[in-house]
Image (tube, rainbow, N blue to C red):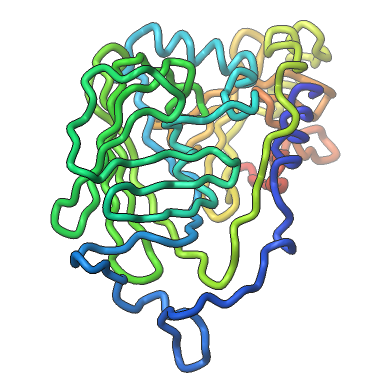
Length: 345
């Protein structure tokens, strides 16, 4: 799993340790009787009456529902190619801006709001500007990594339209591509002091039959600061592919593989997940039902690394066997921690 471990090292190397966050109380914010920030207080407003989105925000990774039937054939072909290459050309793995990728709407960011523009500063030192001065969206801006954005207020909702993206960025970490005709619409709503609701829609007729997107919720990270998380080691040195791994794999007898076929259920972090393991053409196939963002389940070929440990496109899978060699559980080996799934009768 040389390539997989390289990916882990890259990701870990860019994550600031939790213990580094500063403890610095913010002045002039609503607080509860015990002195803590009152996240359910009314959202602050500017002098024009519009909600003020200014603050340091943090949120989970969004999970768009990916439907291959909605994508043009060339997009699905590219997704499969990128999967075989362990997503090594993903912009963030190459220390390049992520642009409109869904994951870019997660993590730490600081929003600065003025009447003429809103700036969103990311912890990887990239930024974007949303023009709020009443200008029209440019019809053909020079393609860039972060696009060209114009915002307006629809009641208490900030509506942002963006165009002008180059075609080097992805729309999800799974490898969904787009053309330079991509248009992104974002809707931001701050229902109270401590929460920000975000809805994102991608429209690109050259790549997708119909618009698609996701929603996510961000939380105000009050009384703290945002530290930088800079990519310093690119994926350019990664080599190999899933095909190379299969050619270099260990041989496991068909009767042993057959003992691993079955349905396994458990929790991945806090989410229920089912892994259906089947045998086809002498190879184990894992269908992961409950894999975030993938309709119908994500399929991964399992390449043997030992008699019980397999690689599934960069993720490790270990079969737990009894004294007869029959699998009783399946462990998914992941950077966020191993998860165990019990075999169903």
